[in-house]
Length: 265
Image 1 (cartoon, one colour):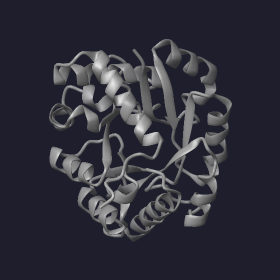
Image 2 (tube, helix red, strand yellow; image 1 turned 90 degrees about the vertical axis):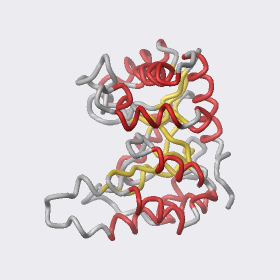
Image 3 (spheres, rainbow, N blue to C red; image 1 turned 45 degrees about the vertical axis):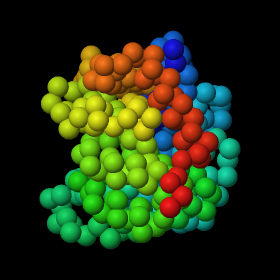
Image 4 (tube, rainbow, N blue to C red; image 1 turned 120 degrees about the horizontal axis):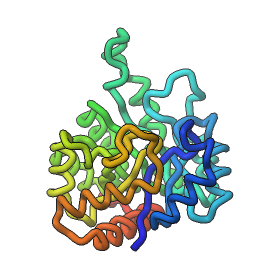
């Protein structure tokens, strides 16, 4: 029985200080593969170098939606970096309206939307899927994905916390839904309902490490080995064997990494 961590940040503080140990524990737990996520162009070379050094790691290239004071990506920047065979996706990108509240710019999200469109255009140019982060911005996220033709390449709604209805709308555009350690939290009823109602063939699992460690590790630094707990909770909620959850979510990741999503509307 093997698992895949579809979203982690191995070069972030808390993990990068013990890369050897983190990767050893990951493999010991049966996590056969992980996707190391890029959130700024400044860190892209580090993300890619780590993936190049380990056959069981893959990489993405992108700029997180609410990162300020960093190099702004162009379509050309993203396309060039995505040329490496270890880069299987563009992102993480998307919209995050939550973290900008209270700073006097709550209504000024044009720059985020423009950055999001740049990533979608790059993904279409290289025919690779999109890793989407959305928080308190579901309607605009879905609208921009539709307007930019993201259904041509598909992708994943990572660390999903929105409603079943939003999940279904994303699936209609060829997107997978990735659940993180949040699904193990006692008060995460909406996420747990998504886990119950969305068919397994549309789900992936992730840690978003070093953040959001699942129960029973909540409050600690998260790491890829803990993605097993996410799978266990989904199996419990769906009343399925964990072996089935492991097999199907891993197969879904393989389709994702191969660029075999997209609704082709």
